[in-house]
Amino acid sequence: MILGAVLAAAFFAVWVWQSAGKLSQAELHHYIGILEKELPQEMEDRAEFIARLRAWGENDDGRPVFMLNLMRYHDQLKPFPGAPTSGTPAEVNAQYEAATTPMLIKRGGYPLVAGPTTRIRSGQNPESNLMVFNPDKDNWDRVVIVRYPGRRTFLDLLASPDYIKVMPYKLSSLEVVLTPVSGELVIPDLRWIVGGGCLAFFLVVGWVRAARCPRSCRITPSSCTTPSNV
Image (cartoon, rainbow, N blue to C red):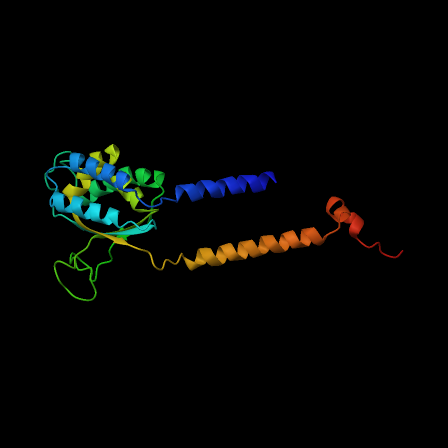
């Protein structure tokens, strides 16, 4: 019973951690107000970004969001208030990701996929798109897909003072396509599914065998053996 209570409490804690619910208009107004005040004035297309966030929040369906990040590093760091002035764009973005990951996990979000793109050819050629070469659709350096419990989680992260402090790191190091995805179909790694299923089956079989064994057998297994004839 104690073990069951502990497991139930752990499940409940994870359930709360991974739940967001729909944004209220008051919450949305609160987050947008912070962003209108705190986002760097030097941010490109700042007003349009805030307008799209507002519209996205108004259409909240309360479901998890999978955020696609397509990143293309600048040739060198762009001057931006609050951003480092030394290092490569890749190094500065790595600092940004290291700083924001704990903020993300605290709110129930976590990266599902993160890594550099595989180049089409060896050498210095930046091609990353197999289908069509187009400078606007090609030459991506890094892709990250992040799961958020809901739109509230994303806006809460974006409006936090700690995040706003490191946001210039990203703005100075790369350009990014930030696309929310609904997650209509999400399939975990099949190795974990099969492994978890096998483990569960093993534990169930062990429990059934133990339940069928007489109590005396579980206490003194030797008492359940049939004595041999002398």
